[in-house]
Image (cartoon, rainbow, N blue to C red; front, side, top):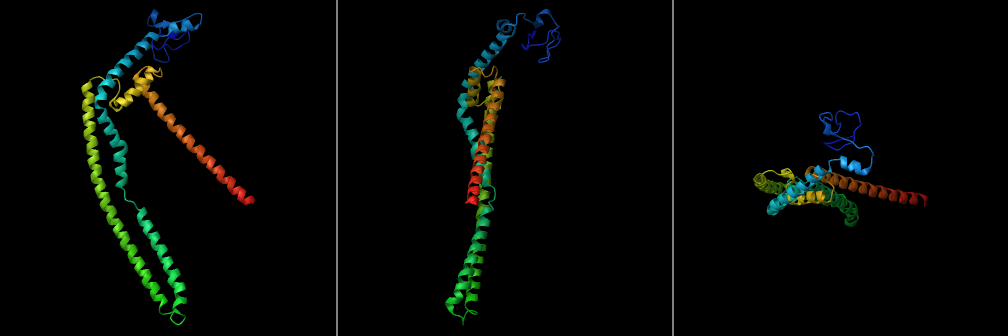
Length: 267
């Protein structure tokens, strides 16, 4: 037998549908059954007409929604650009970059080693044995002090410039966030003015509505809710494929590196 509400196949002695909870004993017409088990009987038993009507009404409603929300497409694009590109970029600028300090310290260390190697060793031979205790050590010490003071000055200047840049970036970030909030309020008012919409405001972007419309027209879904679930599943599958490809590339790179190491050991 089949449930007349959801069309699912059930055991013959069922009293309630285990899929939708429909009471199969409520009336004579609440259960649909077939005897020959053919495809035609099965299609006749299922509520195909109800599904087709839902699909047709969903397409019509999405067409009206796309036509209405497309008038504000530029505002939707600006909102997406702020939240997906401009604001994340500005958030990165507000973070203090400690890498510059480490670079200055590394340069100071290299210059110090250069001074010691050049004037602390070869400088002794150039000024003569008699003066190695008086000239070379003093010259080396003076150069090391100059390098150290220059490194300290560069570090202080870098910190000051970074603090000023971070302060300016925070001000710009507040401006962008306020702009995004204003656009969100305007889009929310525009969404409420439409009245009843088959999707939530987070899916009211006409580009997203067009993708939902295409899914229903292609038969991948019957309702906007099913189309949204399909859209989310497609995004999840794309992410999983990307991670699988990255893992495959890393595995191949590791295998190639191991092959080269083994070849060098054998040679």
